[in-house]
Image (cartoon, rainbow, N blue to C red):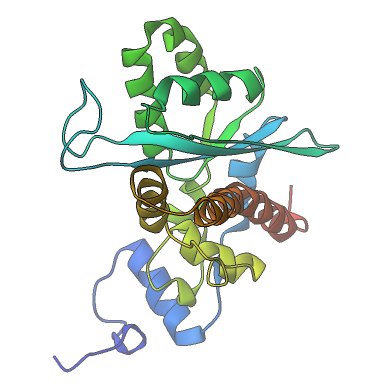
Length: 248
């Protein structure tokens, strides 16, 4: 019909609620903020808030016995723990060519608080990784079940369009939301995407690289993964600011 832009879709065209929000934001250039929806999400969070992110790799040819082609193998996590009074950071990055999964889950159990919400971005991913680990190591099954019950998915308010900015261009990923809400992005990082993190880890682990290069890439991996969990903290802080003046 000759309509090439969201802002030009006529009001006579039937759109669902989320589509209308996108069209209206494209027209105004301003964000849509549903304060009550954001406030409701924030009200479910219980301290300490444990911001958690995983990095995984997958290969066509399995590197270890007992795994399938393209199975996700976790090799790194970042954890920021906000007690409400102070923030602590913990991390794990596998080293060596051995299967990293047992060391990964053991390290996570050691540092993850037993109470409070575990805040993740796109919960099915982290839930899936932990569930697979519990199947592999049954001694962790009860603990894993308790952890996933405490998950709070920070993707939810953005997927539900409680906040939407036209610059998101339809995406609710943390890579789209973070720079819009906080001004912080991944563009200045040496490693700025999950796929790049996976490839870089495999390169320094199974490839022939110098000790200096390996040290640099490991540092870049730690910076990247920590940005994901710190970024979630920044997003929650901005969300709290949005609803500060909302009616009770």
